[in-house]
Length: 90
Ligand code: FES
Image (tube, rainbow, N blue to C red):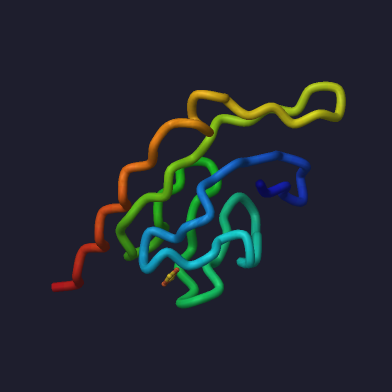
């Protein structure tokens, strides 16, 4: 779970699409997070790697209502596909 400076809440699987780094230990800036291992930037909105990096981390729909955070149950309980390996630069 991430909360941005603007108060937006996002839920994203805690695995970087590069080499499964723990995104929860990354640094949030704007609506993205930098992976603590190799500094890939991941969009909190889409889970996509930003810039020239390629890959995607599953996101979980989340909303805040009356101070409580709600996650889409089916997305939390759904089995996860293994992340596709990153594309190599040409
Ligand atoms: S594991 Fe996240 S950038 Fe490498």
